[in-house]
Image (cartoon, rainbow, N blue to C red):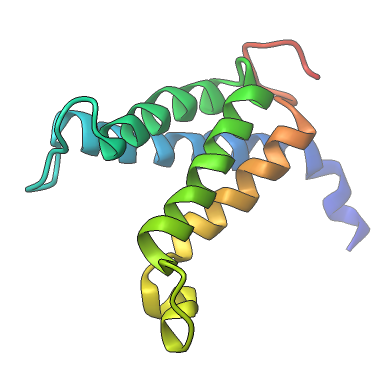
Amino acid sequence: MNFLTRYTDVSYATLRIVSGAIFTIHGVQKIFGVLTDHQPPIGSQLWLGGMIELICGLLIAVGFQTRWAAFLASGTMAVAYIQFHWKFRFGPEFFPAINGGDAAILYCFVFLYIACRGSGTLSLGKSE
């Protein structure tokens, strides 16, 4: 599978751009009430999370201040999983497939990886 090695930089850029863009959409949904029936009150914890999703998602997608944005986004998703999905319950509710926290865990670890690796190619910031 060594032939895939030449695509490492482009595939990483694609991961960064797509995950950042989808994260941004989650923020737009919370902040502007797009495609949802619930819009959190301004200043609430959910609203703050939506602002982090919106701003950090954009920064990650365009590759500007990527490490900081991805680190903040990763921590936000860790809190989201623990507080809103797992809720410190043990038993079947512990598992992401049961408590609905699959995306939060994936975002947490994808953004942690992006924070460690930096913006990479196809970014507005310097390739870190």
